[in-house]
Length: 247
Image 1: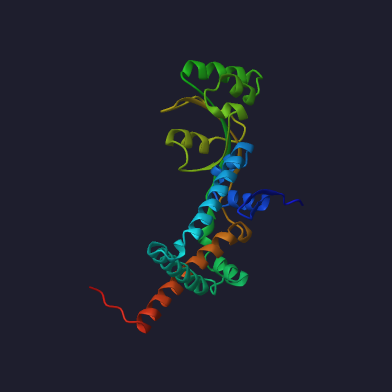
Image 2 (image 1 turned 90 degrees about the vertical axis):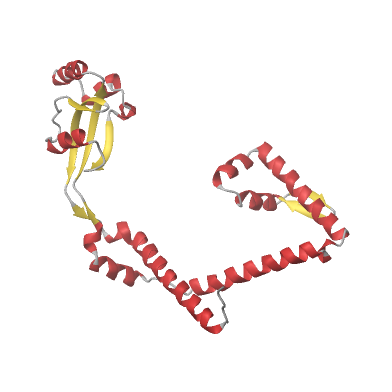
């Protein structure tokens, strides 16, 4: 893989890899902007300016400047502190067996409620809803009717709302949906949004999430708890080792 030199500033090379590394230090949204030809050109010019300013600072002997020395000491203190804390935190780990044991002992925490997969058609009047219902009963596919008549963005997916549990929809809609049989089109249901025709595609019984579904969340949760404990323990150890006067 080529790593072309893009600029040489006072003998210092700036390569493609340097530019890529600089781009990757930005948040994703900014990265997308900088990964264009114009963005790369802008950033390269900023890197050139940075090197020029660095050369100027060296020539002006600013390494002995009081402000620089003060900032350097502050940065050194912050870096050393972060490294010390990181070394303590990095000792903490959670094994697969520990997370598996936690799951087995706390399965009730991972209950999945009853859920539905359903589609709907939303219109602004009961007359429209009844007219559409009649067309569906006469043979028009529900999905086609949704695409043709529904005012909800879900029309693009044939009215599909995906999977949902109780508490995720407005009460009138939820009560009607959970009382429907599969593949039966509801009577018009009035909510604050208008009138709905609902068709349930699948009823999913309550269940418990499998270990594989939740193991990452369990591991992260246990790790955070242990790190909090180690942080607190480290804090107490340091307070007993070094003198602290609170005023």
